[in-house]
Image (cartoon, rainbow, N blue to C red; front, side):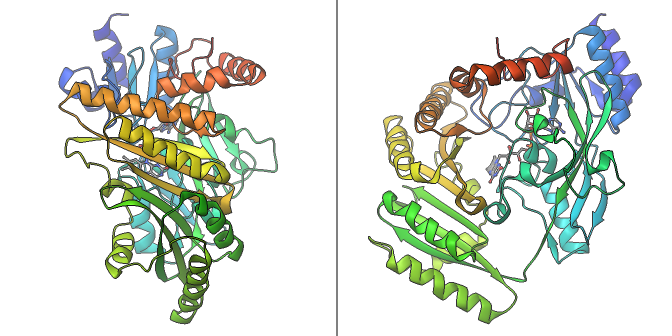
Amino acid sequence: MIKSDILTHLENIVGKDFASNNQEDLFIYSQDSGASLPRPVDFVVLPKTAEEIQKILRLANEERIPIVPMGGGMTLSGLTIPVNGGIVIDLKRMDKILEINEISRYALIEAGVTTGRLTAYLEKHYPDLEVSIPDAPPSATVTGNALIHGSGFLSHKYGNHGDMINGLEMVLPNGDICKLGSCAVSDYWFTRGPIPDLIGLFISSFGTMGIATKMAIKLYPKDNLREVIVGIFKEPKMIPDVISKITNTDIAEDIVFAVSEELIKGYIFLATFITGTSEEEIGTKTKILKRIYRKAKGSYMKVPRSFRNFFLEKPIFISSEADTRRGGGFEYSGNFLPLEKLPEAIEKAIEISRKYGISPSQVSRVIGKGHNVMFAASFSFNRADPNDMENARNALHETNKLVLDLGGIIWKPELAGQKLIIEKMDPSYKQLYKAIRAALDPNRIMNPGNWEIT
Ligand SMILES: Cc1cc2nc3c(=O)[nH]c(=O)nc-3n(C[C@H](O)[C@H](O)[C@H](O)COP(=O)(O)OP(=O)(O)OC[C@H]3O[C@@H](n4cnc5c(N)ncnc54)[C@H](O)[C@@H]3O)c2cc1C
């Protein structure tokens, strides 16, 4: 079929205003805010329903057109930029909050609901409930973020966002619509099991296994008071021990630590967020934490009030750190690391930043009471300068290699990072993934080029 006929089909499915192959419309979808090079897109569509997506995928199968699902497009690793052209399915219009279950504590949402919208909705209508959101711009979708195994301010207490998914409605590559989790059996989207758990197949697979159209995500009770206790430490090697001691107490909501040469050279901030229902509770927790900080060997220092305010008033710390080069470009190597490997990662990633002439800047978050750490080393660049962009990509790649050498896993890897993981992956895992993907998507239409195992 020629391009204009495909466009007509797409317009018939989603409406004339919501399908395009105009260069002006495609431009924005051919790149993201990270350091990936732009790649061409043939069509963009903005469907409103799962049934429309179903029809688009059936057309794509007939015509062998690649499909790339997109939420907010905020991963920074080029995951929504097509590798082989094709149709970007922008899910923005699927923005309904379908149900908030206050008692079983979950939100059932459409895939285009953004983190900003769900948070604002809960604040207004359910002020005693909250959802864990990333420190990302509020245009990131809750579903896109959970599907890439994201993490946020409740992840220390409750785990990765992928673990918070109770159920999914998926449009599979062949166009079938499939429910996963308790919703496959019951009207309640309250749990993933206890039936064979297939939801994991769709997490971190970057749209290669299908398109989520609905998701149920866990909500949590919200305390009305929040405080942050910030320490400044000299030695990275002290950090795992301090974190273990804090996680042992069970009082922290969120533990974030950061290295920033721009803000304070040669030190590591450790910010522990606590919550409570009374000043007394906050006071007790503060005392316990300060005792742990003081007892840590090395140079714990008293923190000026301005630093406390910086963390409390600017929860989006990573964003405020993003553009140190004032060139509008920011990329980061996010990684899952075992806690004990953190000191080495901090020191070696600082060396890599310096080697590439980029001011060292790292932000990490403790996940699930210390079961792993999301370690992010960020690299700013001047978007107007291709050499500077390449410099950031090289720094990212070297950090990714470092993380794999340390026994960690690169999180939301761009194509080059995916390749590094695949090279190291157990052959039987690769075969299993390949077989499942081939069974679900025999025409290889779903985000081809990603997780490409030969
Ligand atoms: C300044 C900054 C700070 C950040 N801080 C954090 C942080 O603290 N924690 C964190 O987790 N992330 C963070 N991120 C990363 C970013 O938030 C996540 O990448 C983003 O939330 C993912 O959601 P999205 O809607 O943008 O997904 P997209 O980028 O649109 O998509 C991500 C991947 O999932 C696929 N996908 C998207 N929607 C669907 C769907 N419905 N069905 C199937 N596949 C789909 C896409 O094809 C793509 O492969 C940060 C980003 C920035 C720019």
